[in-house]
Length: 281
Image 1 (cartoon, rainbow, N blue to C red):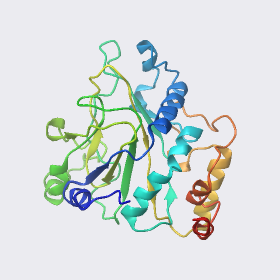
Image 2: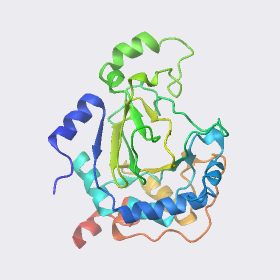
Image 3: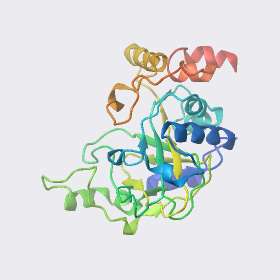
Image 4: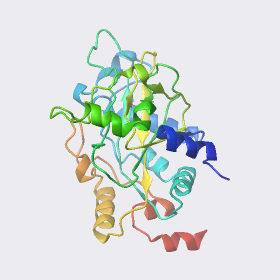
C-alpha cells in the first residue's frame, strides 16, 4: 500500500509538513505511554503526579531506550512511511527523546504554554532534513499538540531578511507569535513529518489530560563505520547519543538490559546490513 498521497507531498512542499494517519498500532502507543509516565513518576489517574518534570526540560523526556519506544522505532509500518518518503529502504533511526506535557495549571505556572521555534538555524543552507513525531495519545484542539506556522515557511527568505538580521536573533527564540499557528489534531499512532525549515512548537495544553508523544525520524545515513559503531554502542550501553546528553533528569546509562531488536531494528542501527534484511523479505 502507499502511505503518502500526492496531496500529502504537495502539502509538505507548500506548508512544510504532512500528517500520516494510523501508522503505529495503538497497542504499541499505549505501552510507550505507560513507560514514559513511569519514567516521569506520573500516575495517569492522579493529576497531581503529572508535574514532576523539570521546568527547563519544557516537556521533553530524556528517555531513549525503553523497550516500548524501540518497538515503535522498529515498527514495520513506520519504516514503510519513511522508506516511501525518501525513496530509499536503507535508513538509520535517530535515538531521539519523548514528550510528556501535562495540562497548564495555575498551581504549576512553569508548565510550558508553547513557543514557536526552529531546532536548527534556518539561515544556514542545508540539504533537506526531516523531523517526525508519533502521537502516543489522542490530541484535540488546544490539547498541547504540535503546532506550526506554514506562512513563515512559505515566505522564509523575506521573513528572515526582515527579522533575522539583528545580532539578538536566535532560532530557538525567534519571537514568532502563536496567533498564526496551525494546530495539528490527531489520534494515537498518527505520524507528523515536517521540514527543519518549518517553525513549530507545542501548543498550550488546555485539556485535562497529558499529551504524550515520541520523536521519531528515519533517514538515509552517511556511509560511515564510525556512525554504525556509535549507534550500536549507544544501544548496547543504553546511553543517549552524545549530542542529546546532559538534560536534567537523564539516566546515564538507563537501567536494565538493552532493548530487544527485530531484524529490521538491527538494520536501523547498523548491527546488520540491509542486504541481509532484503534477503529475508
